[in-house]
Image 1 (cartoon, helix red, strand yellow):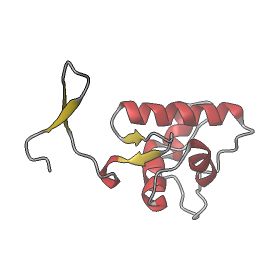
Image 2 (cartoon, one colour):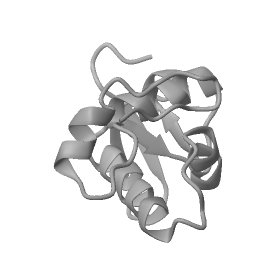
Image 3 (cartoon, one colour):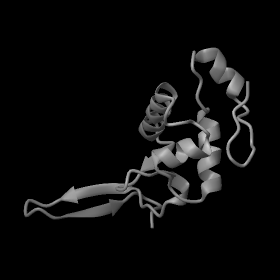
Image 4 (cartoon, one colour):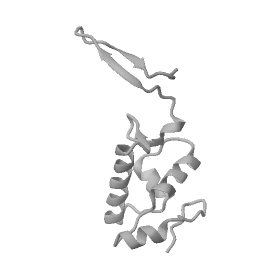
Length: 115
């Protein structure tokens, strides 16, 4: 079993996914590749289209949604304010800590080595 995206690439981990799940979806690695090629954050319906997961196939679409949320939870992806999923390394982000002030404003204290 292989899954291809719209560029014709095959998911190298499709067999592993098929063994683990009754209704396999694209692997995390394949999702990361697809987002790398897109060169911009994608909303879930766009990710599904690129990976050829039909919205009509509710079970697979929901499984893809859960996988994307898990990838955000695990730090593989970030979800922006518009709900689009993107690669952390492609975002212009500064890692740090927010210091809140009692008057309601705050500051970002960058981690060492930050910009």
